[in-house]
Structures are given as structure tokens and as C-alpha cells.
Length: 322
Image 1 (cartoon, rainbow, N blue to C red):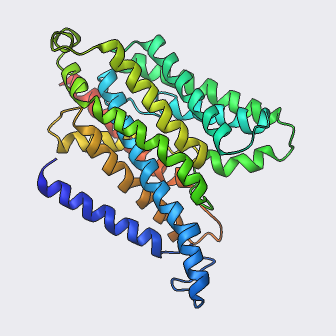
Image 2 (image 1 turned 60 degrees about the horizontal axis):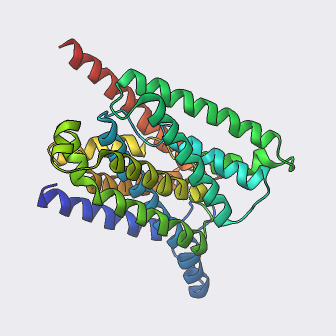
Image 3 (image 1 turned 180 degrees about the horizontal axis):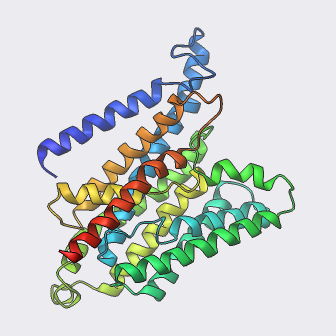
């Protein structure tokens, strides 16, 4: 990214984070609470975790999306399309609702294992250099199986209210998250992003071809394992706390590569920043819609991301024809 782009991104991130801390949920609160003590409590215990989770989870989705796209050499790859988010949701639901192991740590562990299983299965089915059609078919199949298994797990859960309890969370939600949940989720996401960023040079070399990357001294087996495990670690932690949020991991890397002149490895940092901006902005949109109730943030990202995805597919088809 150029210096000007970095400054603009930092300014946008700062403005959105500030707005997220100050803007309330429209139907039930005022911008400035008359009770200073209550206002401080709301700011620190409700809005701060929500804002920080939006930034961290958005950065994780963007960074992991860029790494996955670089690994598969495919701009259509992302945590949600490859089944990582669906696998994480399945793991979290099985752990929390079917096995009854409630709590941040068990749920997060289940989500990470689910994301790891989904990405590992995709890597085995499609291969690390899969074409667009193969990747999409494998990812759609894994996501569909994971979604069906999630529904089955909720149906078999001992609690008859499992469907209602899990619905808003499965659609993606940042509401009523605590500082404890922020602490549990932020550490794995930061570690995962650091691991992915450390492999950016190897991913840039991989874009030149597997033989070239190996000749430059990069271990491709270790690279694939690192990307898969780190993505599963970060996405699983995010899904366990905030649910599945789609399309951030697809849109952010595509925009970042335009700013990094097509270097897939260098796009990880830019995609993380853009992902944080997109999810924070989407969360602000959910507060601006006067429905009288909370709007899942995953709905907003899907409404924005789905047309982007279709346009990207159409552009790739047009380029092949040309």
C-alpha cells in the first residue's frame, strides 16, 4: 500500500472506531446518557467490546481471506466460501448445544476444530492449486454439509429453545459481547494474523509457481499447514464469539490487492485493515436501521458482499472470453 493509502485507511479506521464507541443502538438509547456513571459503564462494558471485536474479527477475516486466496491462487477463495466459517459454526454448536460444554473456551475450541476440519477437507478434495470450478464445488459442498449438520445438531440438542438461542448468533452478531469474550477471542486472532503475516514472503513466492517457491527455499508443505491452521485458529475464535460473518474475507483481499499491485502476500496486512473497516462500518449500519430490534451484522455484509461476488465471477468469465 502507498503511504497515502495507509494514511487514508488509518483515518477511516479511527473515524469508524470512534463512531462505533459513541453511536448507540438507535431505538433504545441516547447519544449522551444523562447519568455519567451509567454512560461510562455502557461505554466500557458494552460499546468497547463490540467495537474491538468488530475491528479484530474484521481484520481476521480479511487477513485469512488474503492468505487463503494466495494459497489457492484464486480470488474466489475465502473463509466462508471454503467452508471454514460453516465448519467453525458447526463445531461451536456441537460443543455448546449438543455436548452441553458451555463457556468461552470449550466453544472456541470446538469452533477452531470445526474450521480446521473444513479447511483440511477442502485442501484434500480440491488440492492447493485448484481451479475456480473445483474450489467452488468443494467449498459449496463442505458448507452445505456443515450447515445441514449444524441444523441437525440444534434439532438434537436437549434444549427445545436451541434454535432460537442460536439463530442471531449464527447470522453474525456483535451485540452484548463482554470484555471477557473479547479477551478470549482477541488472543487467538492476533496470533493467527501474526502467523499469516510472517508467511507473506512465501505466499508471494508461491505466486511465481511451486517450483520457483521451492527453489527460493520455501517449504510449501509447512506453508500450507501454517495457513490452514492459522486461519482455522483465528476464524474459529471469531465465529465462537460473534458467529459467522460472510463475504468480508472475499471482498477485503480483492480490494487490498489493488493497493499492493497484485502481490498476494503483501495484501494480508492491507486486507486485515480493510476487513476491520468493512465490519465496523457494517455494524454501524445495523444500528442505523430503525427496526426496533437488532439486525444481524451478517445480513448487512451478505447484502454488500453477494453482489460483489457475482460481479467478480462475471468479470473472471469475461476475462476468459477475452
